[in-house]
Length: 423
Ligand code: EPU
Image (tube, rainbow, N blue to C red; front, side, top):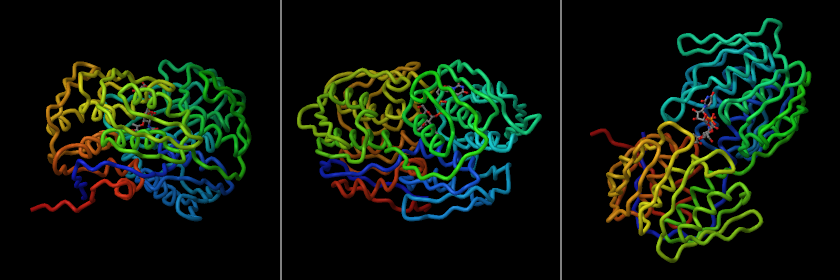
């Protein structure tokens, strides 16, 4: 067990390179199992979710070769199980993508109910609705989802999603890729990572049109072939470093990004008085003046991403006037607020809205990360707080941020990762 020890008050400056997008890798890695030939995937972030995937793959008899850091060849020609090990799967939300990938390729699958960050109820009814429309029979018992098809394959169908779901959209695309006939998905999520998964599947020979819009049409193909693919940069990691720069009154250039994916984050940071310069594949974030208030509501892409909500809340604690944040995606994504309040924040939560009053004084305190972005929010607060903050349960942070200690240290933060002693 490790914790981060952060001495606040250091101004960050310099350049940070963004890694590959966690949430795209979470869809692309299981999609690679749909191909019986080797595929090469580059820009895979070195994070815990990816390591869990690679362990699951090895347990399933899939050949995984690291070509160099971040680049892997995955050969699922030799896959020997369609009921992968449940222990690792339970630790990840994205394990549900094995349902779509295995059903598509083998016409049957068994996966454990997904784990991952706890934001209240996170149903997967829309995933199941899509697979049932494609002819699967789903049985959920004892935390295991078993899916079967009468004739060993899925069949094209018309699916209307009742909510815009990233996971449901990606899973249905996986299922439809090797299904017989055409599938039409309506009211789809338009997030960049859903588009990235579609582009990856198309590079393997899938026939998917419309990803990035609300209607996706997929003509099923018989099989997929080898390809080489590079995962898009992580817009949430980029946004998090933008907030690190803003909260410390710093000057950070964040490289290897797609500025278009950052539009909502850039707009909100500018409202708070932060300067953001958009370059071709980088953004430079500087702040010299006082932080101003902002009101934010999280929405589906291209709205403000829920995955940046906790980090922005932590930033707005340092603003000169009262801000509000309304969570528009998840039932309960404010569990981190009590930890920020322990550091001196003055945040009141009522239903789906947090009112963030200016903090009189934020000071270093022992706190715990309760999920991935909550952990990032505590780092935001710790970087600007007076004194030393110790953050425990950083295993959540390391699920999604590659080498956060190394990257922050290289731009002037005082952060160390130390073993938790149990005396
Ligand atoms: N929903 C349903 N039924 C479903 C699926 C979703 O009601 O069958 C609801 C959810 O409860 C939620 C909303 O629809 O209220 C959106 O959920 P979505 O399915 O889009 O979320 P997800 O696929 O479970 C992914 C990311 C999350 C990110 C959300 C929203 C992965 C592995 N996870 O989750 O990422 O917050 O999309 O963009 O890609 C993170 O990176 O910190 C993270 C939590």
